[in-house]
Length: 170
Image (spheres, rainbow, N blue to C red):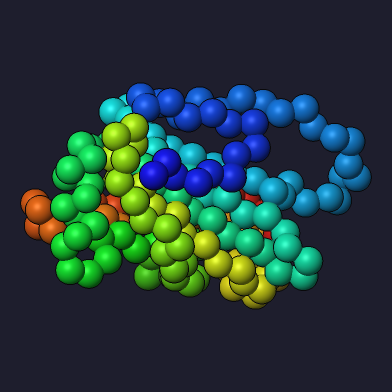
């Protein structure tokens, strides 16, 4: 199964993620920069993304990851007990206690393929209050990022994948 992606002017290959600019429509200066997608890759075919868009009075949040490996290894990971992947959205501030854990994002699809290896999607819809991590006088801008944790039952290792931040006022 190939990872379902919500792409805005982006294309993925098995070896890298390439983001291309899409023509921008004229908008008032106060308009939101959403929908917005940010991605990162490891240079070996694995890539992960965070996508946020407005959905009425709420926000649709999507995280996705492809971890390059053989289809048989990916299927063995899927067949092992428990969920091998989890995702959450965090606030990007560096407070003394670290990043703010804002909310978890549930798995919606998990699959193995020859082209991508292990692929997983996470989706949820939340109110603005869940993304509003900076509600203090003088600092209303919010910086959020996605964190996907991979618990590999074959190697017994955990790996964390952080997306770049999305800056927005929610």
